[in-house]
Image (cartoon, rainbow, N blue to C red):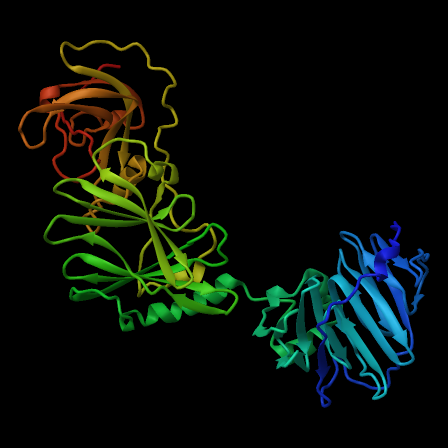
Length: 539
């Protein structure tokens, strides 16, 4: 399909800045050879919707091997491309949504990129008396024999990427040399920033060309080190560097005032939902019971690992009642750090995110951890962090996106009823309906959607819990023996009750004796929920 080309295609005015990049005289072109003459240009082929206009802005019919002359313009629509050659030597490919204009005088040829991107691949160097420039409205790239591409996001900016060779880039009084594997970001005010780019930065419309030319792929690989056809996975690059960091875990400063025990652990946790690679957490245990944690993050742009200048902590203090735990945020945005006093239950939860090489923390909840209230933390959710001893590098060899952290188990049994059935009575005992299940330590944390209040404690115990279909208020004995008080019960620990083995996994109607059911007086699991071994199964 041919789109009508606007007559204003060639009327856009350039700005004052003129930026010239001249290839160094000794460079070898992609493919080698000599003798090309910058005399004619042809539109070799097109794909999709491509329009050509002449010097008067009138449409030109698309013909095979269409000659392009001074004043001609070419533009491409979405998912459309155009290939242009120079004297039968492949020269350029226009990306989709791109627009160019052509100017020619004798042996001087110029392609103005008004918008979009243009790939250039000159397989034979131009003669000494020839010139060919690729320019935007404000910048110029002098081409003699090399390959790469330019992109023009707007009239004030132009980016040059080199896949082979060297050029000198100048803007005003500033000058920089650009080599294969580097890109120059240029601005209208004369600023130039040169930095490396990676194989994953090469656009798809160029990769398609390289896939069809194995010799070109080898030339680019030799010149720039970029394996365009097999770009490195950022996760693999990150894990490779993380292995080195884990291997020297004891050489880092954890900024701890306590004596280290010599034990170290690591974990891989995504710090943002769209992160290319996870963050590395490196933890050092101390004799006091509080561990210090360093955070490392692989940066894809620089292919290097940034270490956060701050530290995190978790654990159970051997004195003072301090409790601290670290979890991954359920929404994938950072970590959740919870701290509280086991004596008072007062504490807070903060969300910690990574900003460059700094950790940013924001308090999102404060209060008593025994209170059953809806908070922002409930909406975010806690995910368990999968920690590994530094001697076990299996996680570094097999980590894939989504493999960590661990999703919490559902907080409601699948067979819970939507409505509460009619219940029998059992004297003055409390009657309720729920589902009996056997839970591990981590299952209980996931069920209650809380961080571990006792990090480092024995986690081998199995808990028998009845999860109530509908939470209800109950007046039960205080764990310290001082009396009774009322609270909301969502589950009851019935570990140790006789005759319940046959009911695991079943929905039951049971009764309990309020005088033999106790609220907890510490941070044992299940957190803030009662325990009894006096249970009668009614249905």
